[in-house]
Image (cartoon, rainbow, N blue to C red):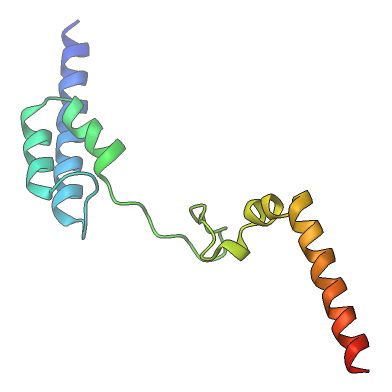
Length: 112
């Protein structure tokens, strides 16, 4: 029983030290300011370092040759959005295009 407590205390101490070193040496931390992360790591036993490793550590940059993860981006303009273009292809828009094509033919016939 004593060995288990010693092992858990050692694990907690190692996590505390690793989380402190990680938070203080990182260029940036996520979700909270660095000072708040240090306080959470020091004040909340076991859960503080675990929270830092889950939510505070910076995301590693992509490695050479690994696939890049890109967030889904919305199209910059409406005509780049396939959903918008599909919504524009309605019966009314088809009639408008046919009418425009007929006017263009009539204009060409009048000119020629």
